[in-house]
Amino acid sequence: MKKIIETSKAPAPVGPYSQAVEVNGFLYCSGQIAINPESGELVLGNISSETTQVMQNVKAVLDEAQLGFENVFKTAIFLTSMSDFKAVNEVYAEYFKTNPPARSCVAVKELPKGVNVEIEVIAFKG
Image (cartoon, rainbow, N blue to C red; front, side):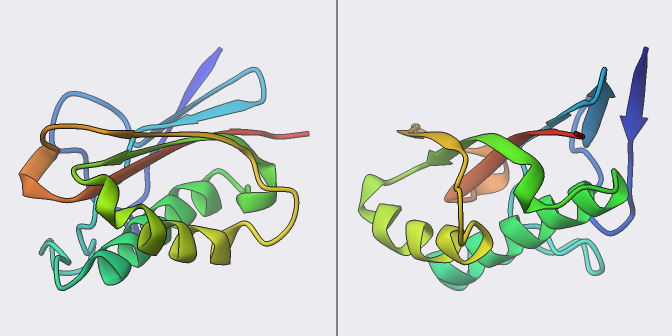
């Protein structure tokens, strides 16, 4: 049975999808971008602040599902420029201090709303 996870502490979806779906103890989180959920505004000052907002949005979805970053076992990072890889990695590492998850990181031509980074995660309750 699937359960839809939704929180006002992360940005509302910008299309026909859920913030996350829980199935058999697995949590599949849609990609998060740097939208401040309180203001609805994009956080685009620099790649570090953008990534921080993305990770805070991921955290809000995990919190709603009663999980934490320690439950995450797979992530995917999408960047519009691989030149941002180092700065994104530095922020990302602050959230995965020990036993980091498996990860992929790819450069893409564009991301929704003109952002520079999008991150999705898969977590497990167990």
